[in-house]
Length: 43
Image (cartoon, rainbow, N blue to C red; front, side, top):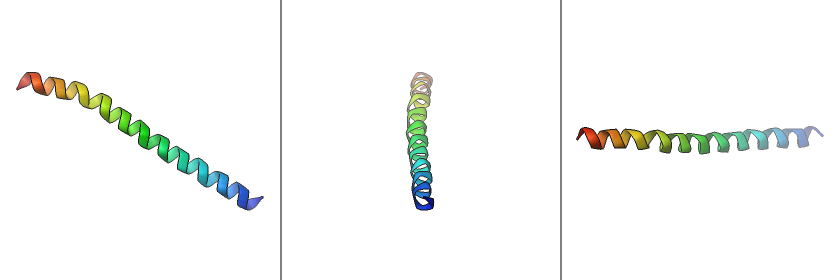
């Protein structure tokens, strides 16, 4: 049971890390669009 719990804990941590990475990528993509647009207008 202890080993199973350890695997589940590790899996949850790994999935959370993947989710964070995906969220960061989406946030970067969303935030970079308006910045690029403003940058293009100012130039």
